[in-house]
Image (cartoon, rainbow, N blue to C red):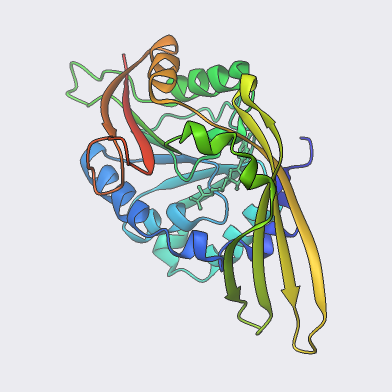
Length: 269
Ligand SMILES: C[S@@+](CC[C@H](N)C(=O)[O-])C[C@H]1O[C@@H](n2cnc3c(N)ncnc32)[C@H](O)[C@@H]1O
């Protein structure tokens, strides 16, 4: 498997960053979704296990799949600190969500906090959704089983912001302290706009200052793919899904002009 974007320094700074710590509404949202749609659950792009481990603690068997060895290592370390029963409900797999075959079925497959936006090519998005479909419980009639659900979230694209030259200048994203006292300042800038491909090359620059005042500059360079609502709906339809709900935030409010998120709940038809 090729080396993954998140195998760099980012894995060590991920959990502590305010962008991740401040993101609490999605955990409750996905917990409620499992109560509604059932388990077992598969999380694609599970990262350090923020959601996977919370679902296991809530009593659900969960498989977490991620391409990054280092993110999975962090997840494993956190899993080791869970009570035995919760720990045993978690199964971690290193794999590529663009194409996977786990040989089992799930009632719910979730793709939280935008891993879909790392799949830059339509071919990969399609093969991901096709893999998801194969892993979902089918209509269980006559046993009365409900059909499996897919839930994914991406940010709602502000088209003007996506090609606004102002974002080529470094802008402050967050400042925080690591548990060992190091100060972190995250700046972000767009290095290139690829409007025709709905992608931006972005740099997140971490300025890390240690106790002696020495500053280190670390760069997380990545390409983000942005989506529009009906593109995702068409993509889902193309891959054999029916969209049963679209939300604009994790409080289940409808998707509107100012909504920060686009959250799709889909049933495999
Ligand atoms: C923003 S993080 C989200 C992590 C986690 N879902 C959460 O909510 O905190 C994106 C994750 O997607 C993973 N990822 C990116 N591309 C992937 C791929 N092709 N297959 C599997 N995981 C991938 C990254 O390694 C990273 O852990």
